[in-house]
Amino acid sequence: MSIYLRLLGYTKKYFQHIMLTIFFSIIFSFLNGASVYLTIPLLDTLFQETNNKQVTRQAIPSSVDNIGFISNIKKSISESFDSYVLRGSKSESLIRICILVMLTFLLKNVVGYFQAYFLTFVEQGTVRDIRNDAFAHLHQLPISFFKNERTGNLISNITNDVNVMQGSISASFLNMVREPLSILVFMGLAISISWRLTLFAFIILPISLGIISWLGLRLRKQVTFVQEKMGDITNVLQETITGVKIVKAFGMEDYETNKFKSETESYFRLMLRITRVRNLSQPLTETLSVLIGVVIIYQGGSMVLQDHTLKASEFLGFLFAIFQMMPPIKELSGVNNRIQEASAAGARVFALIDAPPSIGNSLNPARMNSFSKNIEFAHVTYQYEDAEEPVLNDVSFSVDKGEVVAFVGPSGGGKSTLVDLLPRFYDVTGGTITIDGTDIREIEINDLRGLMGIVTQETILFNESIARNIAYGLNDTSKEDIIHSAKMANAHNFIMEFPEQYETMIGERGVKLSGGQRQRLSIARALLKNPRIMIFDEATSALDNESELLVQEAIERLMENRTTFIIAHRLSTIRRASKIIVIDKGRIIQSGTHDELIENERGLYKRLYDMQFREQV
Image 1: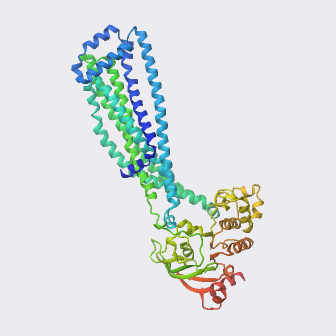
Image 2 (image 1 turned 135 degrees about the horizontal axis):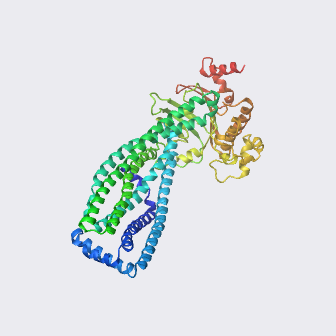
Image 3 (image 1 turned 135 degrees about the vertical axis):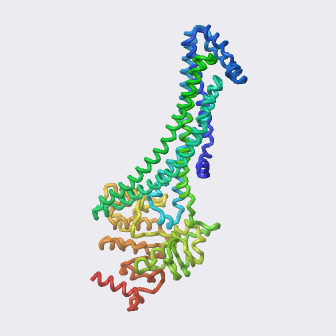
């Protein structure tokens, strides 16, 4: 219930629209009751003589079948209605009743339109707000969160789960208002006609409520499984589409198809279970309603034919009222199911929104737009949450402003994790990282990352134009600055070869470009940002010789007058680094310039260099 109440909390900002929805729902319910009530005088007018009608009314003692105050209200309303509608000839009365029926139904539909519009405004606005909150919070979460979560599940949370939550809003502000009110209106009509017959209607309520509650609990469990399974389907789909080239290259189309079929088959089975549970409540409720209805028809028929305590027209009006109660009762029987479904989906969405953003600003963060001295790693240790041993252990070194420091070593030694600590993609679990003596955890995080530009082996581009990708994150950038950055990154020439040049759409993840072209756009993006600190993580390892030469030239321009961190497997690209740090198994085992390290015949750097040299020969 707490999840459901939290969902309703999102509707507070739409209070006016909710009030209008409730207002029109109330009018709709009374107009619906009026449309049924009009059947009684219509039947009297069509099938009874005026004098017979008057005699019949006198012959039925109200004290026999009606409670006193209800009888008085009914008598007052009937006399007022008769004095206006039933005066004159039967033809005149018929015309008046037909006009009233037409106006009642017309007004009811107009009111129903506005009710639906304002409710939709609340529903869609709430869904938008929840989805926006989930997406915004996603950007506040650390990189470690995404390593532990599957992309398909996250997409399912923000799309499918939020859509499921939408149904509970109408259940709260339409079904929980209009349907109970409609039941009360029709029940009031029924009681005003015969309170004895109305008692039979109450027999169905305790039975239905017990069945509904039981089905609702089962449904909530099943919906949780379904939403998780949809996340599995989305994840398989996302992985297959992203890796379609590898799938085709290894001839794994049948394997991936069968894997997808397995997931959709599980989803199909779960949906059948939910359908069985969901659809069981309504037929059961309807069957019980019809059973009570048969009893009511028999008892009411006896009162008309044998006891003569009820007119035929009133009995038919009573039946209309009772059977008009069934649709809202059926709707209410599904409300609990929808609330349970929304609660199950909401638990997943709010779990995402509530995921703690472990990396954020301190209470009073320091502002920093530049630095003047150095960056220092002091006894830095980092260990992943689910790891048994730290990936970095007691790492210490210092980098002066303007220096170029390179990190080399075997794969898995902790090089990428080390540089990821600097922009606080992760936070150290031990030790400190400082810039000009200030702990980076005390620096405003946007300022900290604003100091840095990052170029990685896996270039991340967006399905936008070339110009927008280069100017990503910069709103007030001129076309001239974009072109200048592209020229500095050796990207301008290939851009101009496209028909739409800088306005060319590059496709998802830049699929329309080669690896070297994507990398040069990434460098142009970093150049335009003009950062104080540059981080290159295997920026040239996946390129051919020609592309590497162009990219290396662009990198050298980007490194000018900047403090640079380089991770490279190709040792030939880091010979001119001010400092080379060799990392193995999370520890620094060597440090120095290229010439110093190459002289140590037993050192790891020398062995790595010789291995690459032999491979090139």
